[in-house]
Length: 150
Image (tube, rainbow, N blue to C red; front, side, top):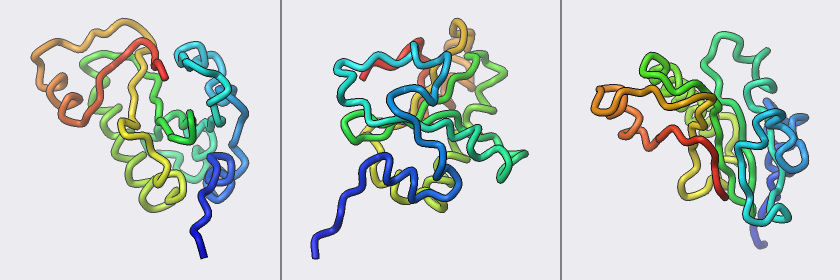
């Protein structure tokens, strides 16, 4: 029997922590939806506010903000101030997301884009170039960007 490939919506619904969080298009991102530029909006497969959906279950965790699917590939977006002092918080959020995907969201984890994690700056980049924090985010594969172009 051929393995069924789930849509993003089905993968979200198969993930108990966020099962009711699916939104059409980029609507889960609310005011931050303007930070995502889709080359073809018809390829947007929906979004989820992971942070809001998981607040009750993981109240003290450094939770990641959003997941969105474009052309059935999932991208994870954290909207956060880009200051040297915030790097450790964003790295904790990234680690939480990776752990959560592995243990609680296997269907979504299977749909990750090749480059899935994005830190979108809520302000200007104030991370000191050449600092240990700049090296840490680079090693984690993150780079603060002003918007994500899909």
